[in-house]
Amino acid sequence: MAGFGVHLATEAPHLLVNNEFLNTGEVAMSEQQFQYDTMVQEALRNVVRQALEELCKDGFRGEHHFYITFKTQTPDVILPNFLHERYPEEMTIVLQHQFWNLQVKQAHFEVELSFNDKRENLVIPFKSITGFADPSVKFGLQFDENIKADLTSDEKNDANELAVTAQYLDEKNKNSGEVVSLDQFRKKTDGNA
Image 1 (cartoon, rainbow, N blue to C red):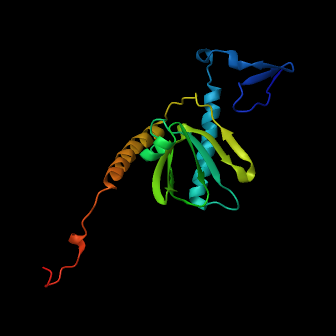
Image 2 (image 1 turned 90 degrees about the vertical axis):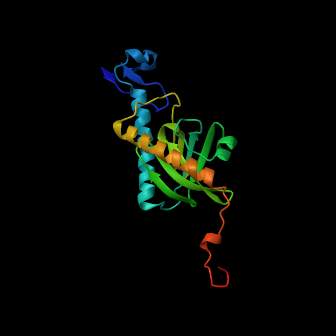
Image 3 (image 1 turned 120 degrees about the horizontal axis):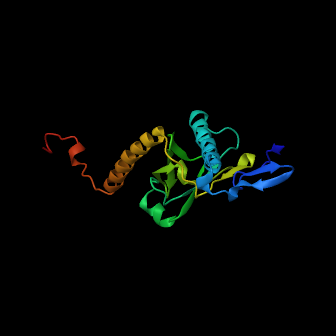
């Protein structure tokens, strides 16, 4: 009689047959009808999405806080240039006391964090996340970087919205260093006209 064994999400799937584990990871992916490893990774990414959605709705209670590690070179990750230079491969952010404008979408989340006393907007696709932790309850997840999931139609729409956001942020960053004359805003009096 076949039974199911317990395994970690990062282990190869296995099946218990007559009290012996069979490693199903040996079957070529093209021969598998069900991509269980991909399904598990996506289900766990939904845990991260749901935690962030709850944070948006209720804020943190108690000592909860999140560590989120992500690949900075993943397509659609949007960071200021100085962060890309400082973290060319991977970056970990902490959401605890000082973060603003957290927005959770189907395929990504956006958040403002302070770097050198300046707020910067970050856009992080869920597919780029390699680790998530809430140390206050000793909870953590690690994701397989090699899992590539197909986008759902909602995620495709979200990706289109992300492209528009990226374009807006690029323009915002280009314009942030401009010097603006305040003369046009000054009140003119008869003596100064």
